[in-house]
Length: 231
Image (tube, rainbow, N blue to C red; front, side, top):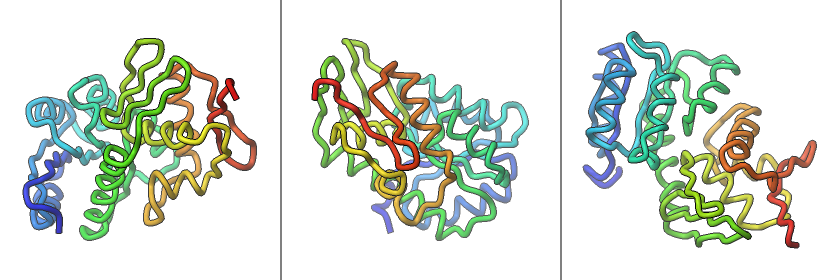
């Protein structure tokens, strides 16, 4: 069981029964739980409460989950908030869209409460591990700061969602090393998490777009590497 009251989670779903069901189990595991029933309400609650995790449905009235996540990712104070989709939509294109919108993970219903709690705990542990055990990386005009999940390039600060930051930090931690896809999955998502084949590709593309670098190279059929052009 987690330390009581340590982590705040915002549940977002238009089905009241699901909110009540999940709230019960999450509270039993030590989470502080609040709820919202559509994307608009979720954004207002997130601004006010600054939760550690937002667990978001996709199909909702007023504002759907994908749009809500895109808006949440524009709010600086929520840069370190983990956002996880929990939805009945299991299509590959929906998962890809979820990651592209800025989500850190994508889970499908139905899911056993115990499995959900373990997944959320794993996400939190990996985030804390990066913050506590990692050093700031300096590469030319870029600084990768794990304590704040911030990348600074040529004096400009760029905030990344935690999973994108974790992928970048992993690759840049050993420049020129080729990381196999299974290595990246293991280090970032863990062995107990199953994600689609396109997940890493989406994260890499978004990192490249946001930071504007071409250091991350694709090694066809193997994985990726952060190429240090000074080497």
